[in-house]
Image 1 (cartoon, rainbow, N blue to C red):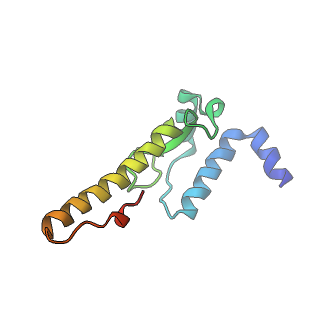
Image 2 (image 1 turned 90 degrees about the vertical axis):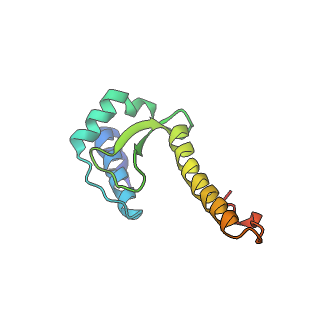
Length: 117
C-alpha cells in the first residue's frame, strides 16, 4: 500500500494510466491505448489538475461505448458529460424498444416496471 501511494505521488500520470487499464480489464473492455496518446490528451486538457468526483471534473471517455480504449476512441470530457452520455444511451434503447413493442402489440399495455430508471 505504501508503494502505491509513493507511486501515485511520484508518477501520477503513469499511476492513473495503469488504473484506467486495470479498470478496463476488470470490465472486459479492450485496452490498446498507448501511454504516449494518454499523455498527449492529459497535457492538452490539464487532466491532472482537474481530476475529482464532481460533475465538472475531467475523465477519460470512450467516444463509441461499444468499442474499447483505443488511441482513436478516447477523449477527455467532464464527469457530467460522460455520465449523461451513458444515461442517454440507456434511455434511447429503452424508449425505442418500448415504442417498438407498443406498435407491434397494440392490445398489450406497455408495463411501467420495464423502465430502467
